[in-house]
Length: 454
Image (tube, rainbow, N blue to C red; front, side, top):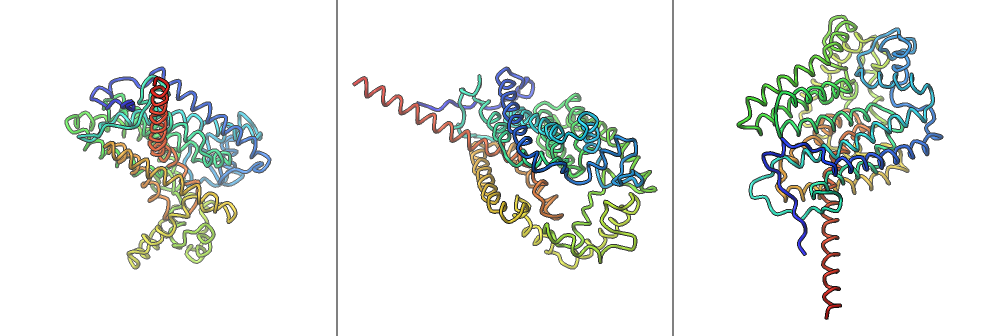
C-alpha cells in the first residue's frame, strides 16, 4: 500500500490563507499541551526556585512600576543601557497584575511560551510552502490522520515536539528575556516566510512590526534582519521591485518603533549612540576566557579607573568602558588571528547545555546529543526532499545564534531561542518514522486479510 504523497507547494500557496480548520485545531491542541506541561513544571519547581528571577529584571521591573525609570539600581538613581526595554516592562506589568505571587508570575511566562508552541505550527506551515528544488523526489513523509491534509503532519509535530521540550519549560520557569525573544523570533520567521510567498506592502508592514518588537526585546537579531532581507531579494527574482519597496516599509516601521529608545539612550549616555543596548559583549570577550567559571576572573585588570561590571555603572560609563574593551579585544584578535575561532570551538559544546553543574551535565549532555542528532537526521530528510530554502533559513538561523553567542560565554539559556527550529528539523524525522510505521502496519493488515481469505 503506497504511502500518501505530500502535495508540493505551487505559486498560489502564498495567496491562500493557512488558517484552515484542521491547522487551527492542531495549533490549539499543541498550545493546550504546551500550557499543561509548563504550568505543571511551574507548580513542581515553585518550592525550589522561590523568588529567583534571572538577571536584574526584578529590580528594573520594580523601578518601572514605581516610576523610578529604567535602572539597575534599587532606588532608580542611575539609568542603564545594558538591557533592552521590552522584558523589564513586561515584568513590571506582571508585578502590577500578580504582585509577588511567583507561581502566578511563572505561569504568565509559561502562557507566553505555550503560545509560542502554537505559533510554531503556523510558522512551519508557511516555511513548508516555500518552493522546493527542481526535480524534487516523491516524498515518503505524510499522512492524513493528523488532519484534513497530509501537509499538517510536520507543522503539527514541530509544535508538539516543542510543547513537550523540557528545557524551555524549565528555564522559562526561572523567568528571563529568552521566553519573549523566542516568541518574537518565531513570529518574525512566520511573517518572513509569508512575505517570501507573497511579498506586498501589508506583509512588509507586518514584518516590520515583528522586527521592531524582536529588537526591543533583545538586539542580538540586529544583523539577522538585513541578512534575511538580502536572501529574500535574491530569491524573489522577478518580484524584486515589490520586495524592495515592501522591505523599505519593513525597516521604516521597525525604525519608528525603536527610535524612541535610541533617543532615550542618546540622552542618558550624554550624546553617545546606542542602538538598543550595550549587550556587555566586550565584557565577555576581553578576557578571552569563555567558560562559565572563568569569564570573571581576569576582568578586573582590564577595567579602566572607574570601571567594573556594567550592571553597577552609569549608562555613560558603561558605553565608555565598552569602547575600551572593544579596543583591547580587537588588538588581541589582530595578534592572535585564530584565537577567536579556537575559543569558539572549545566553547561550543559547553554552550549546549553543559553549564548546570557536574551532576546534571551528564544527563543534559546525553539529551543534547540525542536532540541535535535527531535534528541533523531530520535536516537530511528535508535535504532529500529538496527543501533547500527551508533548510537555508532554519539551519542558518541556528548557526547565526551560535556564532553570535558562543564568543561571549557558555550559558545554556542563550541557546533556547534555537529550540523551535531544532524542533522543526526533528519533526521531519518524527514524521518519517510515523509514516514508515503506518505503512508497515497497513501492509501487515493487507497480509493478514489475504491469509484469512485463503
